[in-house]
Image (cartoon, rainbow, N blue to C red; front, side, top):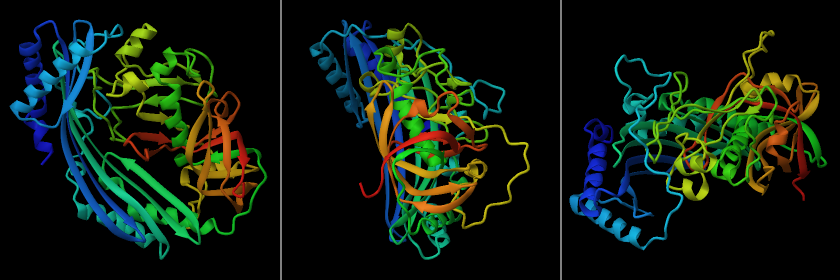
Length: 487
């Protein structure tokens, strides 16, 4: 269904047609950029250990941004017939003439080829269609998602379960009146589920570019092991604790770094902690935005942004030194630099944000490996070596309901979730009740504060937006826990 659209060039033809209509209706002086996206998402949800919903949606959206006589306006439509395209252009021309002057207009992206990536094996020009795309994921059926749900439920062995398995596909094209014309497509699969026993929850989630990589049985067993190990928790007093954060919790750090820290608009307005070329993190920390994916983890985004700027890997932090922030054309002009390919329909209002953040894992240890974990272990495999080295501290599975208290310092408050355990001499001794924390995320990863990083990154889905984070486990010297479950 959807894969045939991009092969026939329909999106790119539609984008070019809208550009021509702008020239016809508004004249050659108008700057126009057009993004045509076909998004198809399917979701299989389960609760009480049974599938209760299977939904699918497919929408083609055409978004036009027009700059004319020093003014800018945007509009969109889902009507792709000729009358709908003409109506889109006419509405936008009317709107632009009523808009206030736009002194921040950064101009159009010039004709620029797409970048390559590690997953490209051809010898010819790199098309946006070559970027790690998995046809089987794009065409996944309800039965394939249901198989993974069934395996998750069975692996939980009688515990109450709930969650979802989703697949998504996007094909898109961009064209502007300066001559830029690019196209691409991407597919993703993700699973997120909990197992519950006597009020205690365990979680397992995973994202990827291939539905074949989602093993419902492995995820279900992991969630169930956490729920069983979380029975009869004790309360600990508030204070600063040494912690191991599992990848699910680390993903929240990356999410807030992307939204508030490495945001080019926040940086230009001096609302971000980021200081370029400053030692703001421990030397063990390297953070990269990887929109094109990799050969090992082909879960890419589109190879261009909503302004038609080609995307490529962007090193945000290297060896503890902040090297870059994400920019669209407007924030780049404010900062006196160039766009990094992070424009979105909302970026002029909310700022450009990285959406494929990776905290680089540590090199594999040369020490003797730990024996394989028991199936009932609540400790994620990637966190086990870090836990084994901890004398006394906490293992934290997940963070949620996180909110910013101080954007400049990126002080966050939130709650632990889905399993906390007291670790003594490298072993779990007791489950711990959920606790509130108040912590500066950059400070938690500052020089000397990172005691270890796991040797494997786990690709995790964002809870809301489809953004992906590649996160290893983290061993941190201090995490500020400010309250417990009873208050």
